Amino acid sequence: MLRLFLLAAAGFILLPLGGCLGGKSELNGSDGGDGSGGGVGVPIGPDDDAEVDRTACGGALTSVPERVATEVSADWLYASGTHAFWADQETGRVQEVDLCTGEIRVVAQFEFLTDLAQDGATLLATGTKDGVVGAFRYDNLRDEVVLLSELRRSGQVAAANGRVFVLLEQDTADPESPYGEPHFDLLEVLPDGPVLLHVVEARAPMTSTSLVGASAAGVYVRQDFDCGCNAGLTLYPSDGTDSKGITDSAGSRSIAVQGDRMFLASDLDPQGFGESVVDIVSVPIEDGESKVLFGRDEALTRDVYQIAADERSVCIKPIRTAPRCIDQTSGELRSLSAESNTDSSSLIAMGDGVVAWVSRTETTAELWAAVP
Image (cartoon, rainbow, N blue to C red; front, top):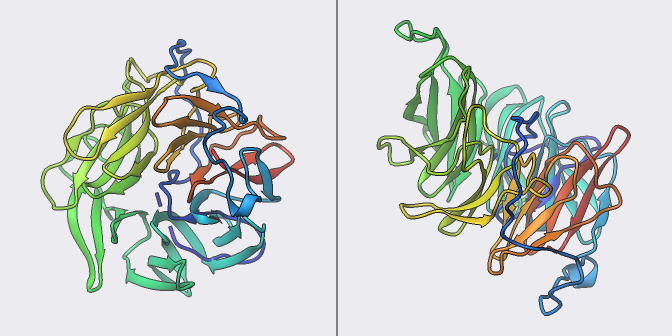
């Protein structure tokens, strides 16, 4: 979702840019609910499906998870190729790790980092750098950070197909709003400055408005309301036409775009505040029918806040468990066991045939990688 950045002093950020990744920053909490079994695929072990090549980095990475970095302080994680990038909001540091060698370096440093997103081999970020509040771009291929535009205030960022969007809270609440809450301006960042595309209105008492991601169709926003309802995603088209709700997106907190489809962790039977056990759903970018890639399962798809994908696999990182990857063709679910597989992190990202994730406990925070 997400994102540029500086990395300064120690720390790590992960993921190489290039695949379809995981979402924005770490999300907290669960909606509650028990859910019921109903997985479509069958969990398989890392040695099954032997005809599939599960190696990368000349054999340095396999289906057996490898610890790539320790003492990782990450609020965002992205991947490209066989590199991972992670960023820490508190320090404003953006770091890169070579998943093949484990070599780590700082690529950007902000005085304050608001948000981070990815578009191919490019990271986008909003925050304050060198005293300037604005939107920034880190080009992984050129290894440079550039200012795209100054902003009146920092906000959330998303990008797709070379277009960069920011969501900024308006300076004052709408005097005609019955809820007394501010609207949000959805802007496209252009060379001559940001241009207003949409106003995201406060349609009910809200607890949060989140810029979830972007695709060729436009920008996806989630609004959480102070009511007994399960929020879905709204698409704000990049051509400025009217917004519309996304079918089967209730409960989704991130998206993973791959080709002409995107993948969601959704509650297909939304009631009240929704369930914490979700379905993994494939939704067309343009009009068309969604399909369940893996059905909700109490043991396998509980507390999924991040999702990542490449051409072959869709991967999730439920809270308190190891990552799981679903084969898009067979629907089989592969669990990636790691040395530490009970943790509080949901950060996951995919690069070129590799998946990276953060495992966090009370005493450790580590970056792991494997071939799904």
